[in-house]
Length: 147
Image 1 (cartoon, rainbow, N blue to C red):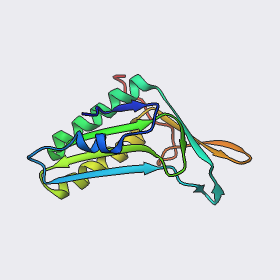
Image 2: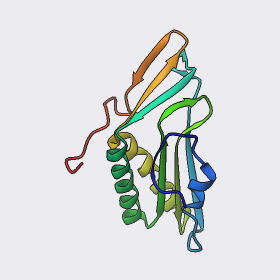
Image 3: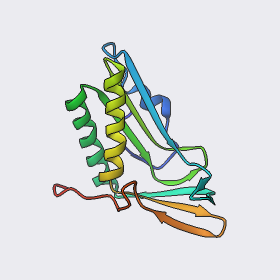
Image 4: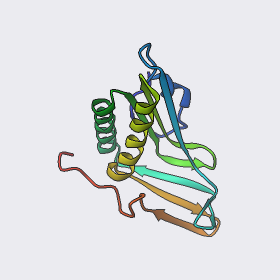
């Protein structure tokens, strides 16, 4: 079973997916966020991620717990740090649920909350330099008061 957390190596997508399987689950949904080769019209060679791992893992666990409470799902989130090559996954979210609607809602919740709350930073590597890229809302991840 793969626990939710931060890793510094290639993510085992199959192990993440297997961690949410169960006889009660009629829907298993796996999301892979992979490095793409272009952003804003600029060629991207690779990504690099940094994280405050202890805080990030607490927040990832909290997000999975919240998804379970709201939709009755089992969720696992694994995010990678370090260099991520083009087409490799930087994040994998797996959700097991009794029905597909709960799996889709739980997965979307996990992704959106990850972007908004978790202390992970992304740098894009270009042929002529690099740039730190903000999360979806344009801001750095927010720290909760209990971290």
